[in-house]
Length: 348
Ligand SMILES: [Zn+2]
Image 1 (cartoon, helix red, strand yellow):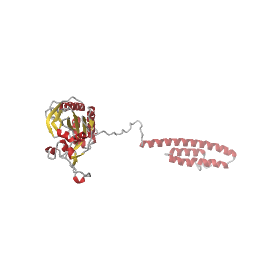
Image 2 (cartoon, rainbow, N blue to C red):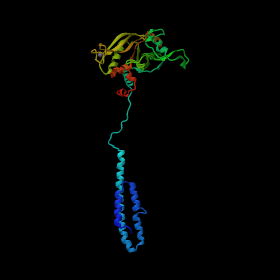
Image 3 (cartoon, rainbow, N blue to C red):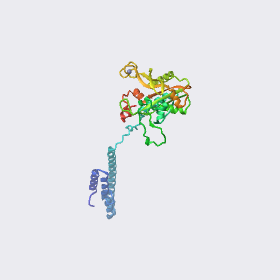
Image 4 (cartoon, rainbow, N blue to C red):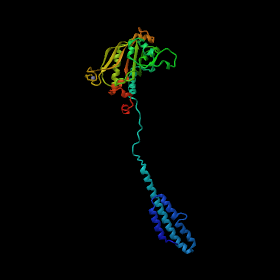
């Protein structure tokens, strides 16, 4: 025997203590406990001894083997633990941290305003109807009492569709609608009175963009036709609408105005929301703000739609959804609604 068991034990313990990782432990196993390891070889060498000596030596070697196996097992456990915790340091999972919140989008402020307005009108018995954004000249102008030579057409300069790009065979001119009023005639042609509708939608104007103007914006058209529908009905209805929409008590004022498709026509003013009617700079010290145009449907519009103006009467109105939104949220620049600034758009 080359080495004494004590020397071997000390060497093995030293090697084991020096092992820094599981790979080094594998090396240790090969050197001491493996098939050709020192202890295995010692046991094998016993065959060369006499029975008596074999018994004496064998016991000592087996005790040593047991000791080293136990130490090896302990060290393996220890290194495994270390490895697990050092791996975890780079990829630490703290299960007490709240989860990542899923970002939920929100509706565009103009959509929200439009839907709120629709809800209020629906509660008053109005149906919501929609129509085409590309409109014929007849529906956009002629049917609304604006024949080709009517000066009022110049109020609404717009985008005309090029003749050669037309796919349908017609002599009619088409344009991007300048207002939602064509829906009045379109709806009346297909329905019998009495009726109450609103028609929200996008309209277009050929004009320069500034804080109050866009080349496209949103309008909400309204129409109520019956045997005895009057301006008084309109006034009550619109006051109810504004009070519900702005959730506060307000006053309404009608001023005479002119629109080709209504007679009489009027502008509708509402209590200034900035000063609550106490007169301020925003409302030009009048205490009122201009909200929309309205009037009693012109007999020529009834005729265009195929109604007899002697049998029916009613009011029509058109309000800007953008304007409603600007008032409700106190936004001073219409362009913000059409920009892509999420900091603005996600506030609503
Ligand atoms: Zn004011």
